[in-house]
Length: 228
Image (tube, rainbow, N blue to C red; front, top):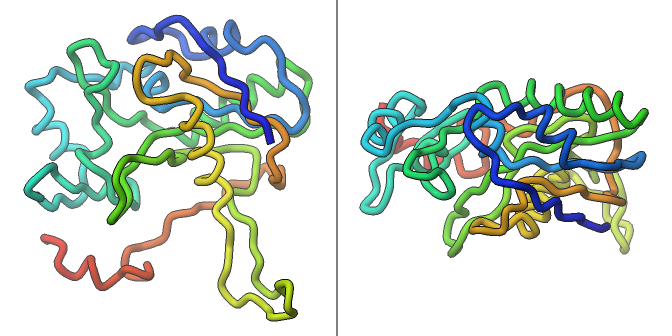
């Protein structure tokens, strides 16, 4: 697998996302996956706010909030994140919210690029970052994807010693997003997009969700103390 960085000019608020992507991506091949940071998607939608509006916007964009000694831990779009996903970095004295309808945007980007380069198999990921429990630092995550199966199931398959798996599924989308963010960086790299080549994925057109309700999660007991 190979990841190709796309260094670009600075994306400005309300810039046209489609035109920006078309200008920066010169060529694509069958089986490529394009990863785009959620920040430029949100900025294209005008999803920004003033620094003094951060607390208000966190409340407006969260389903649940647990106030910790450090930052608000919030439940947004079927997962936990910090500050409702609102970010101050690379925002030029503003804050950037999560984009609206990221799955719809991912599908639009995929449709545009497939048509432009006459491709049948093409994937798209909208990336963000997240903090992991009991781990220092952040890691890449997909907030949306299109064109490929985000899971690889090993259920019913045998391992090296003939033991059949009962539960194991590999999260392909998360793994690809983490790889993309490693190249994109989180500082002044100016790499809001990458092209992932040779990824071991199944290209499909239907949407498969990764999220499931907290009550069926392996860590469900942690949610019992959630404020109502």
